[in-house]
Length: 226
Length: 79
Image (cartoon, rainbow over all chains, first blue to last red):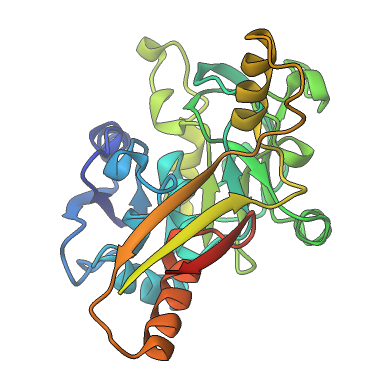
């Protein structure tokens, strides 16, 4: 399996995610946003960070980068795309995922570990969460409040396109366990074909016991199976 | 030609920044402030003499870049 991590000016989780991919024997290449063509790969990763200083809207300027056209082509061909944090925001601005990400309800940048329930394990990113569907991952964002109109939220629920929801340590999905005000506690969503995943939490930050946990590893090992 | 675009959050979208500004003004003693919605303002100079053509271009960039039409409205002001 081969991956490409796209690097934008202001990306800062690009190397973390590259380390994670390589740890699980995914052959990775870093790709600068100004390139026109993607190298041959199965997976494109849009990393976290603050592309273009979040000017205009988070992910907005990055979504007009030169590399984006070939990422859209990659998506149309069924290629896998993973957007983490700012990467999720970029996928939304590109139109590859629906909805929008507003500022956190309490206006604060939130950086802490939270619990997630894996809602859909029937996709290339989450198969290994079948036996462990309540996990702990870090979040670190200011605009992670997923918002969509009722039609969209119902469509996501009905078609099982929600990958992750914020929950408590027992898996209960309640208002109290919602860190940022997201509609229906949504933390990550899939597109209709389930080849694109956008998520606010950072799986690449928990891939080793030395980093205090390994719940992120299962996402990368799931990718190996696909 | 100079054209400006104002982008504001749609009515039913929560505007936490506007709320904080309003609360702060209340704390400063301005009890009569009823609501504040924060937005963005763009001043655009466009090298196009044909007003209709300019309108079309500004309309396009307002939708494609300056605003996120899911949560924001835009108004174009021609001077």
